[in-house]
Length: 345
Image 1 (tube, rainbow, N blue to C red):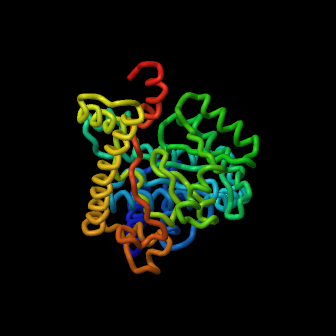
Image 2: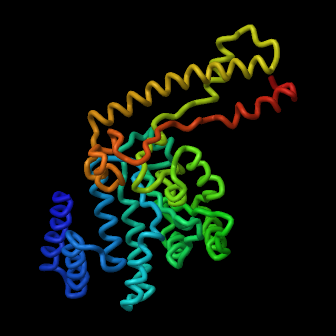
Image 3: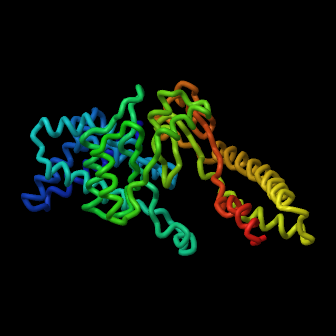
């Protein structure tokens, strides 16, 4: 934390140095920026400007620490709401507030992971996966939509960029205003926001041992991986399991074919079981390697229970510690029975 304080003050010093040669108009902007930096280095945020600046610098510091893809912003319409209302109460204009958030959105597009051309072709470019979530419920299950929820979605019309990766949580009690705004932004054709179903996701977390209050606070990491902000260290994409490849392997290992479709399905399931066991072994090895070589002490102090447990999140310090990999290509094997009936196999 002392390092983070020094880091913010370094930015403050640089900004104050820039004021010397700046035009009067720019010097006024830089003076406010320096005052914000000097305050948030050690004191709580007072308004939206303070809060956005602090969120951004913490995000950048976390990137320095781990060079990680998919460090995400969580439920910004929830934790920024008091600061947004403080700015409104202080007389900040709607135009200035919108510009602040626009600038923040542009900053999220400046973090670029070093990837090869081949890797970039798989990920359609170089987005880092700064996921920002709006909507959803509070810990009591009541709809938590507020005036910032629709504003954060609406600003996508101004930037038209793939970052931040906007997501919206929806459930049985989501108000029409948020539904209509999400549809309006989806209609732009940018592929945003992504829509997540509370009626499915909250019970799914509960089945995995997450408390109801924590499950109701879920957010999204990176692309579409669900997580519990500040409580979960989830390696959700620790591997990519190619299910269709298992189908091909099964065919290759049985050149004489199968007596019937049920035998084919049984063979595919056996192949999947064998390779899932290997995947689990690899995931566990990766988990242990992270613990031994890639501790993240700054991130750990921001995650509940890590300090109480006296352990880095890579060593199990977080409240929840799931890991696993998504099954890829599973849409094709699921259609096999239908295709087989048509004589396709």
